[in-house]
Length: 237
Image (cartoon, rainbow, N blue to C red; front, side):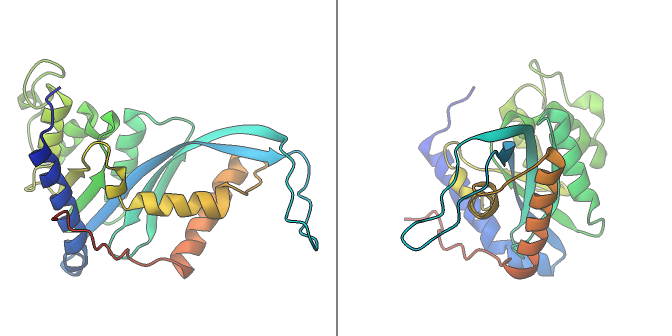
């Protein structure tokens, strides 16, 4: 794996900031800017005993015992221009195939979008051979020209696949945050809200109940709290 220099890291940070800054103008031109990430292993925990209510001189008290009902993994899209969460996906796994299916659902949700700009981290499923094949198909690029995974061509390595997926001439352009810089991904801010407002204190009777409560929270958030994030960091000291 090729080491990333300080200059390359700084270039990525500046580019990411520019993607956020340009999102409103791009939205007016019919282009979409999406910050995407996963929240894995979300537990459906049912408290074994009810909370003890707040009383004078006593804070709310919660029993530590709980019943496990399994976990879900979520793919979340944060629309940078509107601040809304759109087209979420969920399931019991988080595989290369799951990530591709999620991205296909996202792009299909707005067939009239002139271009998609998608910000995400360097997880291997975000730079998969399957994703490269799909983008190549969308761009009319023959599969036999892509090379062989792990050996040659565009498919040779994660770096070569990421470079292809970052091609600005494509209809869907992927922007990868610098490693160890997850704070560059705006969806992380929304995920922290979900954890604090719902998951941390929630009671979930089943995986279906967990799913329904998260989807209901997304609907509520979009209708009452959603707004674009005022991103002031430019990456330039």
